[in-house]
Image 1 (cartoon, one colour):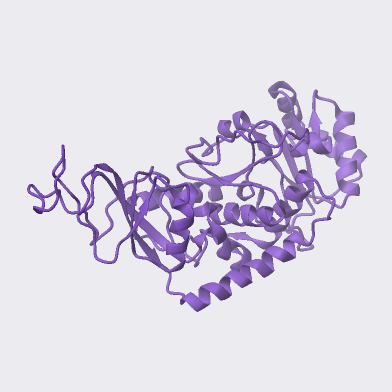
Image 2: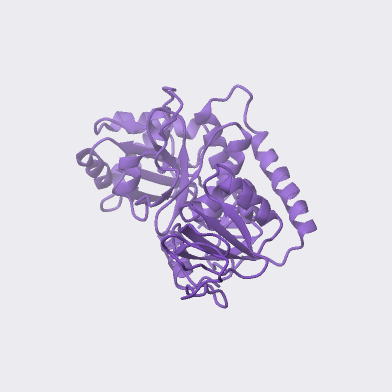
Length: 396
């Protein structure tokens, strides 16, 4: 829960202050960056401009790059300008560019510190036709351009290490599962919200520290290397991924599946409650009301692969049955997992399973003993998704 609240604080904080170190703005946020203001329209434009209806124009700061939003290459052109560390960019005839657009760019544009946008309607000096205008000011980290190229190579090395773990014949579920699990092993959630690049791919893959957007950017980057599209999805306070695997929307949240805990042997606990959720399921949970990003695909892959972890692995309980619990836990123990988990189709059966932990937990202890485990454990519940999770061999 602490991690979830920090994600909320992070993205709320960027709304309040665009100068927050390493911060990104939520999509479609209009702000004024310090020392960055669009002048008011002049009452009388220069004589050489003749406009049939509106006679106002907007001036832009010197050195501003202008992108015509009528073209399909808007984001590609913007990316090239960000590679050049352009400070001012004016985009005409285009909807505001948001965090989801930035995260979806190659390498999640990790060298971008933050940005502000002022939106208006008018025309630039020398033009006569009004259009939507977004004037952006971009701020960058202090890394030199040569360092950026080197940092891209570092990202690719780490991403390739994870991608190499995926068998050549792996389907989309196996690819996503391997990347999901390996990120949890390699990345630590930055509770301090102070380390560099925690919002982007570099922080997650190279530094090993990130917050939710860093996890999501890294997952998207590696899956793209593997030929799968898993764009970033945003609420007003959180980031995770969509996956094109079937004929409907499905989502994976690596951040919330990472408890950042190890057992007494130093092995990471890896959870899967947020692996392969439908839109209805994900939006029932806290901080997952979708506001931006890849949430409206019309070109899903027509593939019947089951993406939900519990359904795919046979850990979804259609009814309360202690024999089923024992068989699931046996299978998980045999696989070497230090997380014993099951999800229930309905709340009534889930509540029966929760009751097994009442009192001294002797009812659950008997089930675990029959499954082959007799030692200490932690347990937790997801009351929305009806998931029971038992972490065994804890480091007390």
